[in-house]
Image (cartoon, rainbow, N blue to C red; front, top):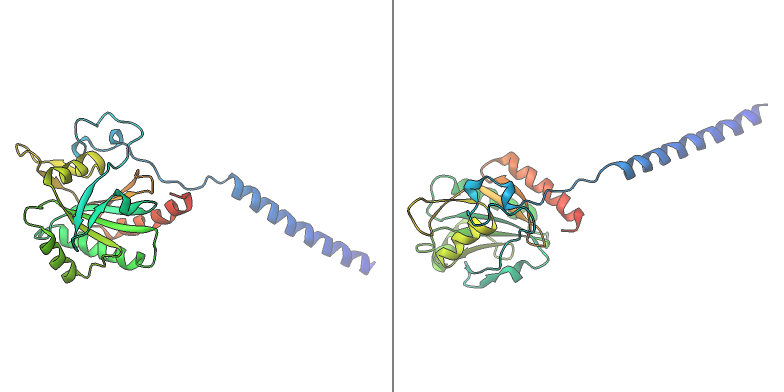
Amino acid sequence: MRKFLAKYKRFALVMVFLSVVIISAINYALTPKKSLRIYQPNDVNPEMVDTTIQYIKKYHRVADFSFINQNGDTITQETFRDRIYIADFFFTTCLTICPIMTDHMLLLQKELIDDPQVLLLSHTVTPETDDVAQLHKYAAKKGVDARKWHLVTGDKKAIYEMARKSYLAAKDQPYNAYDLVHTENFVLVDTKGRIRGFYDGTDPEAIQTLLEDLDILKKEGH
């Protein structure tokens, strides 16, 4: 009798274990996997979007570009081929939000320095004063690693159009052609050039959310 009960007990334990495994597998299969939104111009505050593309509801991607980084190297969309990257807009003499944004980009650089999948890209909005020499000086002062983070300058009109028509991250400056008011937004771009998130570059909690979203995006394969 005892032997029978012992065998029955082992059988019951095995069945309980198998049931837990099966239920866990079913729950995992049925649980929706986290995925980041793909942003379109129509999804964003119209103040941040050029009027010519505010109606677009699908297929938006960052346009091709060509700028010069702090080391004098030409940086294009090919630099970011098959990479995720985080973009923002700043200028080296800014005394308001830019220093905080730069500190948070430095934090991202530190967190991602050994991750070859992710790069950082900062565009100056005052290229007339932020030339290569100025960007190089600023990068050296702040501790920017050019392997991970590109500070770029170039044609002001081209930078303006990237901010308004590609990254959806800047406001018009009324009455000044090709001038803008940059925002605090960090923009997350996937390997296909699609915008997957906007984050307040002055908010530590938003930076943490960005890092968490990066993990989700990498698991998506984008």
